[in-house]
Image (cartoon, rainbow, N blue to C red; front, side, top):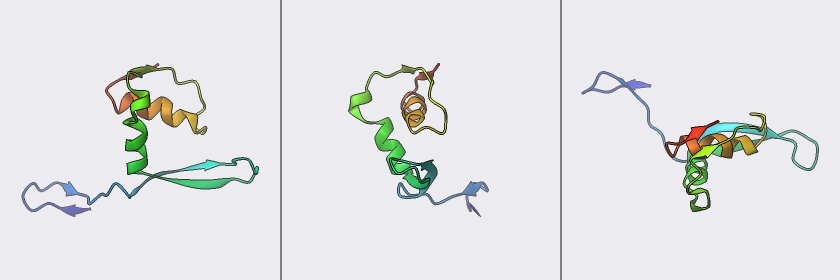
Amino acid sequence: LRESDSLKEPFTDLSPDNLAYVEYTSGSTGVPKGVAVRHADVTALATDPRFAGHERVLLHSPLAFDASTYELWVPLLNGGTVA
């Protein structure tokens, strides 16, 4: 972080290509591997038109399961609710 000259607040340079998080999955091989998820990937998921109207979503997947990314990101980044 660096200090902004005009606002005296922390300033961070971010790009859509920056890493948002790493999700670990065993896939079909049974061998754990990390999958890098960029900020652009989260945005693409949350703004996918196929999920339009998904304003209230039941969170029932374990947070370590990849389906939870839909259950969290889509409603929350669109002003919706997770139940």
